[in-house]
Image (cartoon, rainbow, N blue to C red; front, side, top):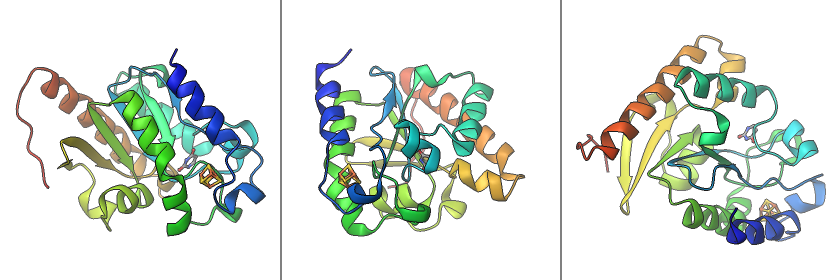
Length: 193
Ligand code: URA
Ligand code: SF4
């Protein structure tokens, strides 16, 4: 258990720093292993997450779990969170001001977990965290920024609309696990910056 994470979670669940606090049911803090080597970052809670107060528990979450299992991981091995912690109305993309208001919580999660690699899930996380703009073009790549490694992949919800992407996501997560294995052995991995 982490007292720091408990404190952070309490701040998130009572947060009213942006307008999303007005329409949410529950704010959704990150969840998983506090010693995780991999941290996944999605966009924002959806309907199921808002109702349950947990990240990735709906259809997209089921797809993410399947991809993790395919790569030999369980959800308890990793830490899963989002760019913003409250559901935007009708699942619209979170506004820049909402991302900015929420950013200290994501930073706090990162400071506590200190993942060896961060897996960016989709365009919202890609643009918010790395200023990127085409996950379709860049997925599968590794980026090093400020001494932190990132791996880029698609958002699991994309699989709902384009079922052929399921194998792409699964293969990406498998690649991510292989990359982590190399990092832990001190083997150099090729990165973009
Ligand atoms: N989509 C996200 O980006 N995050 C969730 O937690 C659920 C769906
Ligand atoms: Fe606070 Fe983030 Fe929710 Fe906005 S989205 S109210 S900043 S927890």
